Length: 195
Image (cartoon, one colour):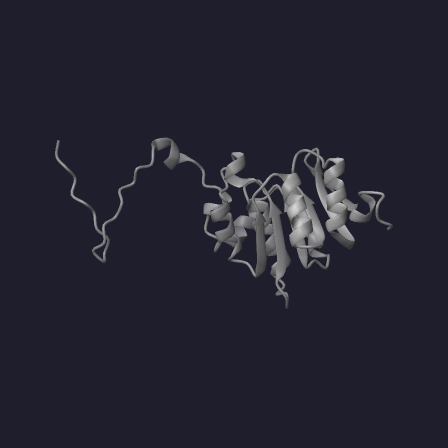
């Protein structure tokens, strides 16, 4: 059987052959592997409900966001585009709790972080289960203005206590119920804080 000669780049360096299977090469790329330069495509790839969420968020004064469960990452990129397109004088703080590839997601922590660097936001990714991630955010990063709870399961009582602790006065939490976003003032999440 003849051996194929090694391919070389234009600079003379060896190039590794493509070893992807037909299934891998035909797979649809996730949000983290798409080029960020096409921001309009990112904004158009989110659902109608997400676009309604962004219109509501755009009218708010937000300096810090916590997103729980990022999905394929598209919503986060479009949300950051919405919050930073006006040209903030201080960078937006974006925190995300998700297990990424450790939880079986196609979205890898490394690729998502690379995509987030394209925006004028300080991104902090917390790659762990929700309970541990909320505890880490409370102890390490402090309070946030906006919480986007995209996990299909509603928060447990323990998670609600953590969310109450990490929300600033006047903070708002958006959560999904039956495919629609609902808005809750974080002071109403738990009876521990007065409104």
